Amino acid sequence: MNEKTTEGKSSGGTSASSSATAMTGGRRPRIALACGGTGGHTFPGIATARVLAARGCDVALLQAGRAVEARTFEGWDGEVFNTGARRSPASIPGCVMRVWREFGRRRPDALVVMGSYTSVPPAIAAWLRGIPVVIHEANAAPGAANAFIARFAAAAGIAFPEAKGRFPRRMRTEDVGMPLRAEFAKGAGATRTSPDRFSLLVMGGSQGALRLNEIVVGAVASIRERHQELFQRIKVTHIAGTRNEGAARAMYAAAGLGDPSVEVVGFSNEMARLYAEADFCISRAGASSCMELALAGLPALFVPLPHLAADHQTLNARSMAERGGGDWLPQDGLSAETLADYIAGVAGDQARRRSMREAMLAASRPDAAERFAALVLDVVGKTV
Image (tube, rainbow, N blue to C red; front, side, top):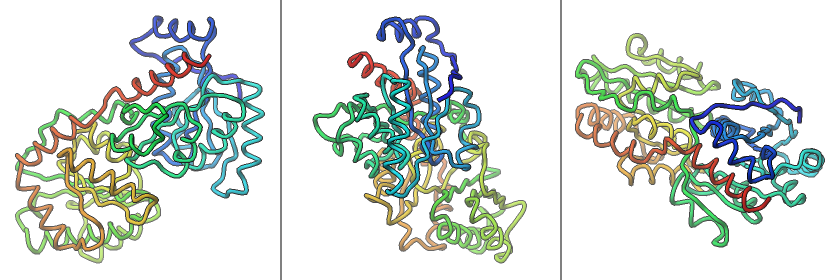
């Protein structure tokens, strides 16, 4: 790792920094944080890292070193170490040794892992070095990586209360929420009840978006035919996924749909604005999407991506629906016509959307990054 660090800023200021250094004998606590892979792991990791830095810690991020990570690491000016992690099991021993050597040089007081295959080699290296490991589990059911790491981890922060019973009983588990960027709360207080428009945000996710895209295109076409009053005021912003953007545009064009009713984008780095402008969302049920929508107070219909490990998106979707923040429907059996009728129903029921919005906000944890950082520092204080 290079020696570049970031101080960060927070309302905690000097007192938070002094408290952190006191637990490590006057030096800055050293935290390694593995959050490489997808944005769903990186963004919460960086949010946590910034709070830890603001509290006086020396924080280094561990990434796999893949080109795709460059976009998600933009804005972080602290230390970064490339582990070389790959999805292939054959790459694990070499990666473990690389991180083990680095940990021997740096001696972090704790390793924080955000999940995914990029967390496994650093966690093994930390275990071999006797360094405590703290997990963040974003989903209602732990993924394979975190389930493995839990065998020797000291603690876990969870985003869904349902995850608590899926970790070993002897392990400390706290419901901290999902660390997110504060700007997602930008539109949380908006009423979004204008009768002149209905803004629908569609998020297909980076995986398996094609089938959901097909259903949504068919639903918008069905709205044009069967719910003409709604079609006159609907605006669809469809985030189709980078790989599927061209196909989604072609499907809308083939259906005779386009401006001003439909806007298709592959990827957006302005999600806070899109959440603030939307009245309703159709989304996959990845953990980040669920919790970003909760923080934004945006009601949603969740359509889980099927056939994932532990069916975790279905568990996420059920959790959000049980709390009243939205509904969920399985992809199998969902047709363009049934989705069109569902959209027409929620578009015409402002009271229902308002109730969903309030439930979403109640499910959110705006202070999740601070809560998770506090858990990490408490583990450090008990082990140094």
